[in-house]
Length: 349
Ligand code: GYE
Image 1 (spheres, protein in one colour):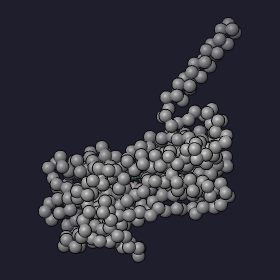
Image 2 (image 1 turned 60 degrees about the vertical axis):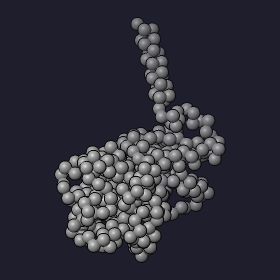
Image 3 (image 1 turned 180 degrees about the vertical axis):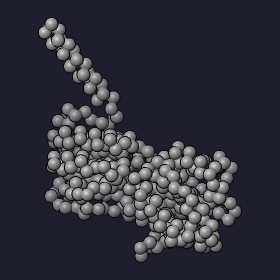
Image 4 (image 1 turned 120 degrees about the vertical axis):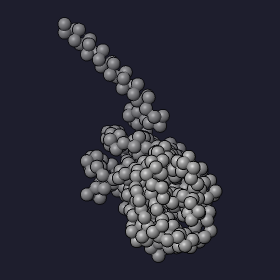
């Protein structure tokens, strides 16, 4: 009997080992099994928890990170795609802690709910660098620093452009009927971009009719726009919180028989958006289907590397590191916008 139990135990153990082995092998190609990390002794090991793969901005951001933290450059990168779920990102961070990586880089999906896991990283003595979006923690020492965009500034630039453009065209602010296709709710990019529009609508007397999330994806952008067109018959401006949503919204508008463009007075629906990464969106901006794009720069790999190098030398980088960004439109009516006393020339897409 005892022998049978021992044998069963061994069989169970073998099965579990086999299953775990399969799981590790079927992970994303860039994911690295825990045991392989021991090979990485001579490298600087970096665990990167990316939030997902929802947009072209995100793909460009991931490529920038993978292209920077290479073995040739002396890094051993453990990359994990969180599939837009915070729980997956938390699991990834716990795995990085177990693997005793030198640095953790986190691109968080949303702002809340990071205190415990970042506390665990701090207790383990592993510096955390935030990239792109931010976290909302009561204790700011839970992360070393952050690099990314000023999302509210991006919004201030685009709303300043809308104000200048509509004034030049003699459109009464009350006649601007806006819908906002928001990004993933609770993410820093969504919060900043939605706040900017809300403030501008209040200050200028624009009619902001609805705010609905399109989750930063083309499919959701189209679905949401489709529903908004059925709900309102007077929409003349669609504010999309990224280009992928804009591409989806344009499909919905064109499918409904309406025309996208900047000639609001003749019944066209104006589309504005953020990023300036996706080629189709840039082409749409050249053709005038998207009237204005506030750039959001995804190429953070070298910026994160510079922060890691500073930390490695025992230096204290700035806590918040902002990226300079442009604004694009093919319409020449507005030449520049001024936000917080800074002048931004409108560039051609
Ligand atoms: O604008 C959007 C992406 O957080 C800046 O997330 C990022 C945003 C970007 O999905 O396309």
